[in-house]
Image (cartoon, helix red, strand yellow):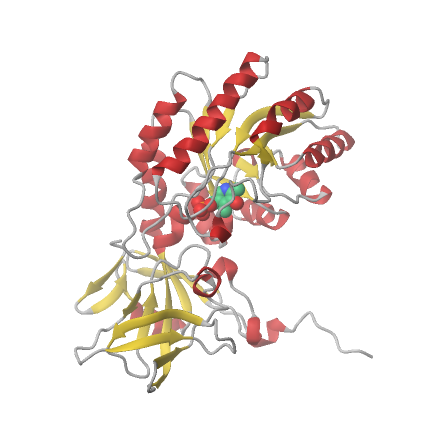
Length: 414
Ligand SMILES: *Cc1c(COP(=O)(O)O)cnc(C)c1O
């Protein structure tokens, strides 16, 4: 990752010193690099040059309007999982014709809004959802474009909380039930069968699970085609992992070569739903050391960011690199980097070897995906500010929440 690098001994985002951002905007805050986001998108998109395809950013990874808008400007589409994300995408300038709608629990109102806007496809996850959408579309005089999310029963070998393509997961329909559902859909008046969809999990660092799942989906495409149900697209989901520590990750070019080989001569448009890989390494969480609390057993560095800002360590035991913004040259100690929230699970990193002093700034790396998006107000902590650095310029893209906003919608009893 070159967007965040040391310049004259101080960590910078592109051409801006992180210390100057902290001084101006306070901590904790998220800092994203525009160049890193754009490069990640272009690298993935270019890997499929020459093949009809559409990249639909899974905006649940980071749904800040500025980031969604940056990607929309590059021609990126979007994978949404709620009416809220649909509204965000439209507010950020997304083209509805480049939106696919995933998720196991779409409501009537969400379906209706997406139909009115004319989205590209509904990725359906159950037989009931098919009947439901057919009814909603009928009541609006529309025909809903659909695909089924099939569950290929492939182990993505990632954290169990982010595996989605196993039989025991709530997602998708069993591949063995797909044929009969497609037949049923083909006979319904208010849906139009367009494609097939899958997404087997997140932070997948090996190519094999992707290929195994994709080849099962391609097989199904061929069986459907033999029955006269011709699909226009295959949506291979997201899930490509990023490097947090020292993981060997999948190069987009290798992924593209493997998928192109599986596609063969079929005239299907390819859809992808990458989330983490487009934004994960394009952001850091900037935080300040409040207190150092050395102890007989463990040394604690208490910082002003917490699990409400970055939940991944507490939720998945995730590992994030922690860097001193201005590293000191004294003897290091082993620190537990923890936040102020009243939970023992409130840690950002364990056992980091650093030379720290109170007031120091730390950057928690790879905090562009599933960080701010998963943040909360637990302990009545206002959500952090978000900034995008573009060369030498810093743009505030989300104001730090004010404490009063946290209870503005609450009422006392009479
Ligand atoms: C979360 C999600 C994605 C994106 O996953 P990443 O691991 O961030 O690439 C794509 N598709 C669906 C349906 C998802 O739920």
